[in-house]
Figure 1: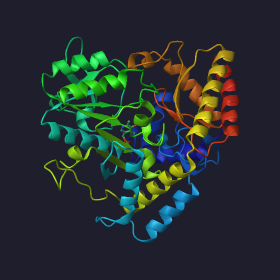
Figure 2 (figure 1 turned 60 degrees about the vertical axis):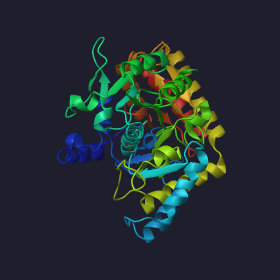
Figure 3 (figure 1 turned 45 degrees about the horizontal axis):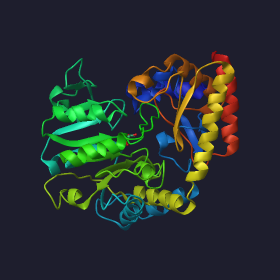
Figure 4 (figure 1 turned 180 degrees about the horizontal axis):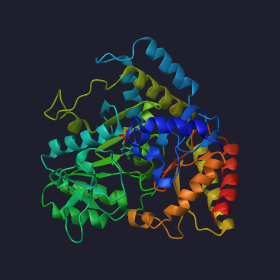
Length: 428
Ligand SMILES: *Cc1c(COP(=O)(O)O)cnc(C)c1O
């Protein structure tokens, strides 16, 4: 597959943007690849600058549950843009998006719209701290909650309870209030909670982990976190930036039947435009300015074009209820990938929740960060490149989720499975 134009464009971009990109994973370094640049998206297909076509299982990191350039979303964007692209004042479209979110999530009585998932989680944590008047937050190894300082933490070494920064530029004092527990291990969260004395403000978790590859919650995990928060008075925050409207209309909290105090959203609710939101119990949310003392603001928050696109995307989900069909498509892809692994004699285990899935190149069960990290990165990288050359785009990292959309057909899945058989033979 020839990618001359992409190569030249990426070369130019490297003179302007660090690494040639505006978000690191786009550089394809985790798969030892050369990134292509997108010319356009059509439904389930991406077209690159050289005119190569790919069946897209990245789907803008899960934001595009209706595929690229869906007509209803496009029309909503065009109509909204015709009336102005931003006012910095309240508008009608925001309320429409907000009502759809509150309708889907019974745990959300009040909502605030922001501009990214990062902002949503950062603000939800600030609110939880303000509400409880405590500082400590428990997070889980392998989860991602955006790139705000306090959440770029990793567990300290050995028996240390204190976290250390995961990025340059983050002061140790910023992550000292962030404690890291083990995913799917509620007892580890209990131990971390004890370390805080009476200082636990919040437990923050991806209810289905998507950022160490897909790792679904085991029975008792989310329930255990709910109990911990009930007992300690800490705020339970579900980061549903990926899973909201993805694993069910009402997100992971509907699918697994555990209700958080606060929920963060993003990705799907913007219809592919930049967005985030956080919401929950009125008693907590009403501590936000202008009603309360917890400050949070945004010039472009509740932007009319974003809100119109998001509302159009959510209306489609509400009216078409595509979740059973998405589940069938994703199951077919998961089973096809596993059988391709078997026939090539290479271990490939697929973790899946609804239409999000990851094929881990390992023979072992993946249930937390440590087990995810045992997957073979080199093999994934070779597999990713072989699939790309066969016209299938997977996530450009072994520890990310692939996504199906309502634009994918059973034929797209068959095409990908056939490509996987061929690709895995070439890597074995
Ligand atoms: C993508 C993501 C974020 C960050 O959202 P951005 O819009 O990229 O800032 C936060 N949490 C989770 C679970 C995510 O997947």
